[in-house]
Amino acid sequence: MSIKLFELLLYASIYTVALSVVSILIGFAIAILLSGMLLSKKGLFVVPAQIFISFFRGVPLLVQLLLIYNMLPAIGLNVPSIVAAIVGLSLCTAAYQAENMRGGFASVPTGLVESAEMVGLTPGQIFRRIKAPIALRLTFPALVNEAILILKASSLVSVVGVIELTRMAQDLAGSTFLPLQIFAAAGLIYLVINWIVALAGDFIERSLPGVPR
Image 1 (tube, helix red, strand yellow):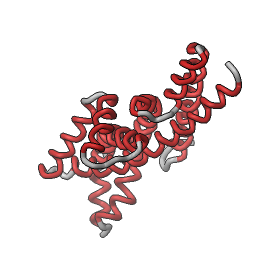
Image 2 (cartoon, helix red, strand yellow; image 1 turned 45 degrees about the horizontal axis):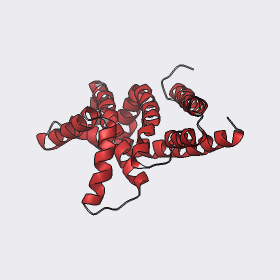
Image 3 (cartoon, rainbow, N blue to C red; image 1 turned 135 degrees about the vertical axis):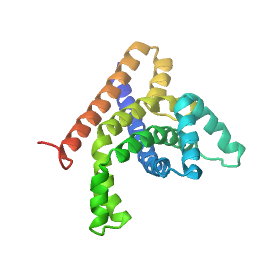
Image 4 (cartoon, helix red, strand yellow; image 1 turned 90 degrees about the vertical axis):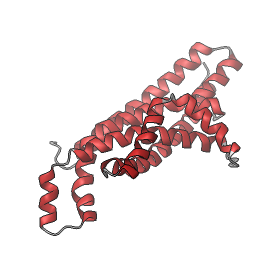
């Protein structure tokens, strides 16, 4: 396989990383909201959150992407395929991250919260200074794992026309008749990207407060 073909794969991998990062960040914001709804213990909030999580965890991501891709134009939203891909990945990862965050917030020691209330901290201060840091520390490994899963799952967005790493590999394999070399190179790029994410996650985790160095 030529250097030019490998450069095309590397260029496409930039879209894969960018697409995944944007989706993970949007999904994280949605997950915090969902976890808060789950922990509210009010049916008005809990039931919709449970339905959302059950749907996006129970339906295959491929089906979700195709559904969103075809649904958006049906409701009058003619957006680029990349937007539909980001929406699909974001909603899917939000469902998994919400469960991780819910477990993290539920594991915050009640005594710490009660002590903070006794010294006069407001609910907002308790959340920022106690609940959020502890929940993040407890769920960080799971969040890193979810990020790696989304990076790999982003290969599915090729079905809605997004030219990312997998789609580029498919196109190059079809035009060069070198499927083995092309897909092996694509697999190597995925491996390196996920290895870097895992290393970065391990470094950040060790830097979090309360972690032995």
